[in-house]
Every structure is written in C-alpha cells, then in structure tokens.
Image 1 (spheres, rainbow, N blue to C red):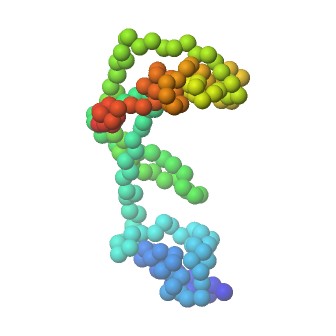
Image 2 (image 1 turned 90 degrees about the vertical axis):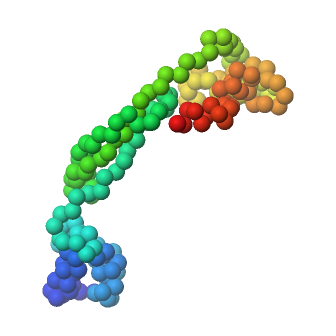
Image 3 (image 1 turned 120 degrees about the vertical axis):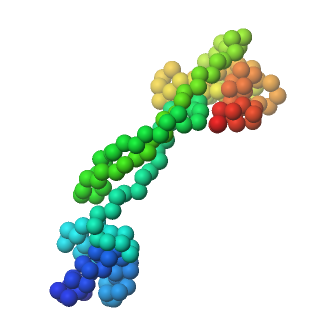
Length: 177
C-alpha cells in the first residue's frame, strides 16, 4: 500500500478531528490500524484531540492515586492535594495533574499479655502434620526456618500464629474503614 499525498492529507485531517487509528483505517480503506499508527509516528503528528472537540491541546484527566503502607492501618482521607507530575510516555514527556489522598495513620495497640512462643527453628524437611508451619525470615537467606511449635487439631499454625493469621471479621472491617 502506497501513501499518496491525498491519503496522507486525509490521514492528517482525520487525526486532527480526533478519530481513532481503527476509524481512520476504516475510512481510508486498504490499510490496517497499525499502518495508520506507524504513519502518524513517522509524520510526527501531535496527540489527537478529543472526538468532536477542537484540535487544541486538551488537559489530561486527573487520576486518583492512593499511597499505601503495608504495616499501617489507614483511616478516612485527611486531605486531598493535587500535584503536577512529569512522566515519560513514548518518546515524549507529559505533565499530568494527579490527585493524592493523604491518609491519617492510626496506631494500633497490641495487647501486652501476649506470650510469643519460642520457635523450634525447623527447616522444611523437619515439619510434620503436628508442627506449626509459620515461616520466619527470608526464604532466600540461610537463617530461614519455620516456627515448629506443637499445634492443636489439624490447624497449620500454633495458637499464637493462628491468632496472627486468622482475624475475626469484625476486626478486619474496623481496619478497612
């Protein structure tokens, strides 16, 4: 397929009107969506305008990003701030406004009467159906081991680690609010 001057001008006009590459390919006929995208890049055409709008640059849509920390509980948003972030998109740099919700950290007090069991420090091959299988440490390090304390019934964890692993539904709901 050859790109004639007439077809290139029609491509530029349709692109400026905000049509998608698929729509342009259908109107031009005999050309694929990928061929249209390739030609647009080779012509260094600016980003498309929104369909039905003018070809002037449109403001990018705001995105909401929520920063989360794995070890803290979060409450309702304390404040919403807007920041301008520069990021790379293809061969261009884009400036985009991002709404960031700041969260209040809630400190959770742990009961003081909890007794942490002394681990038997078993390796995987030493585990049985009657030992706690709670992993301790980094599996990629030499000091990685399992709790190994005795368990009740057919649970995978000892009493202490079962309390950590299985939280009552009411506590999970409180933490999610």
